[in-house]
Amino acid sequence: MTLLSTPAVSVRDLRKSFGSLEVLRGISLDAAEGQVISILGSSGSGKSTMLRCINMLETPDAGEIAIGGEVIALRKGRNGRTEPANRSQVDRIRSRVAMVFQSFNLWSHLTVLENVIEAPIHVQKRPRAECIAEAEALLAKVGIVDKRNHYPAHLSGGQQQRAAIARALAMKPQLMLFDEPTSALDPELVGEVLRVMRSLAEEGRTMLVVTHEMGFARDVSSRVVFLHKGMVEEDGPPGEVFSAPTSPRFRQFISEHR
Amino acid sequence: MSTLSLMSLGSDGWGLAMLVAAGVTLSVASCGFLLGSVIGGLVAWVKLSGGAVARAAADAYTTILRGIPDLLIIYLFYFGGSALLSSIAGLLGPGGFVGVSGFAAGATAIGIISGAYQSEVFRGAYTALNRGEIEAAKSVGMHRALMFRRIIAPQVLRYAIPGLGNVWQLALKESALVSVTGLVELLRQSAIGAGSTREPFSFYLAAAVLYLAITTVSSWGFRRAESYAMRGVRRT
Image 1 (tube, rainbow over the protein chains, first blue to last red):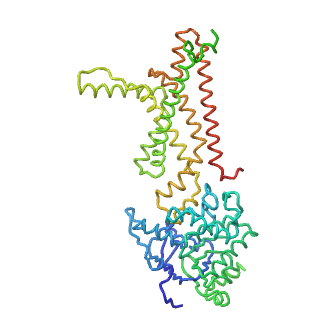
Image 2 (cartoon, each protein chain N blue to C red; image 1 turned 60 degrees about the vertical axis):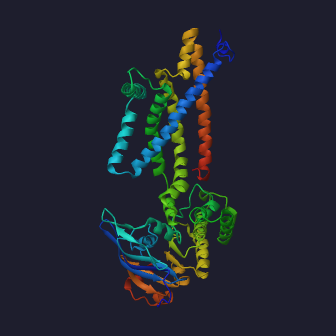
Image 3 (cartoon, rainbow over the protein chains, first blue to last red; image 1 turned 135 degrees about the horizontal axis):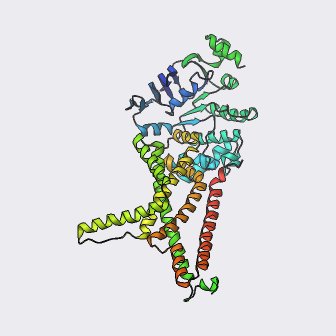
């Protein structure tokens, strides 16, 4: 695939070890504006770690990450490990890259509405009234506007995850990262979250989705990337990779996950 | 004379003096408790994120303060503070004994003791936080101070309230020990009244009632604060 414009996110030769365990062994990935990339792989393949490196929740040991063409500056710290060279750059980039977590991670002391307006008001410093109006529209969009004054603990998992998606959208992100967004949900609640994600994909949002939902990968994403032992093993449009996988490991993965 | 008439608020009763003394008790305990909150917060922060040396110092502080009798600490502050002031005064002019105020020594002692306990309360509350919520705060681009103010502090306080309620009651009862410095707080006032009227039981009974009133109202307050703070938490 040729990229005509600056990629929304560009990952170059990303490496990361935890102790002696090498989790990422040189991953490169470019995502064009509007692409929805499903990242598949068995547990331990490094897919979540890669996603967490993109917004610096994990600091890569080596490699380069650029968001919308802006390279995240890294340096060697005093203890020999890499660290962000500029915290305010990391904060600025994070405010443009939204993350949806497996365990929702809504702030438990705030209501659903307060969760959604928190960062727009305090990080982006936008007017409160405007943030509230937008938050209510987003909550309506994900179908839980009637729960806006509830606390997260009083919502089902599916409702919490939809609230978390609304919180992510409220930042007007250039890029959305989903870290196994349906893995913590009861099976009957998975559908409502996937429907919201599908509608986001149809709006043309740029999304990186670490998932085990083969249906989503096959039907919604524009591209599928399969990781194995910290490397990209398969990469292509779902129509191609599912019907004619080049990697035997991916073929095996598909047969185990149908 | 009956207890009630002894404690009348009129000019011949001791009621007003006892109420004022209860006010002094409340003030010295509150000042000590608030000082303890500041100390406890700082020490908890050092324990959680400081370097090895700072952490060892913080651990030593809590170990020592929790291992020495409170009365002894009050003596150390009162006489230590007075000795320090006297030697400073001696440098400035002809020597003599300069005492620190009982209130200052007492509030400081209570603060230092309370701080040791509160640091453990705050540390425990912080470790009860959900790490994922902190990651979520990072992921939206909150810088450290903002994250502390908006996400961490409210939640730490929420988990700390029950423990702080206990520490507050300890501080209140420690304040009775400050009577050894001559500060006329509730217990000291009762002793004075008991001595001059030869009605010790009436005075100590009245003091017990006043202490109980203070602790009852404050534990009601802490319960209210806790139920407000836990409004977003599902009861299991």
